[in-house]
Image (cartoon, helix red, strand yellow):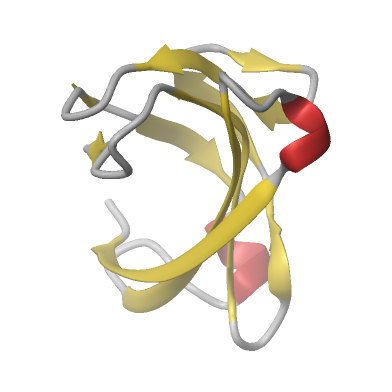
Length: 101
């Protein structure tokens, strides 16, 4: 789940996932909301609004994480405020701790 705590409506232009060993190169071929090409875009997320994001069919083995394993995954989110437009792209980073099923 991702929540907009920025105080303004934003669009997420992309979410990249990876780990320290391979950088942001873990590719997920399916996601909810639906991927556009290789990008996960979520438009018009209002301030305070939360969205569920479900990744599936991810290439975790390429990142050295096998089924049943656990890992710290780096997440990079590219976004921009709707009022400013995509010329004012910003980026934030964080970590997820996951178990691969």
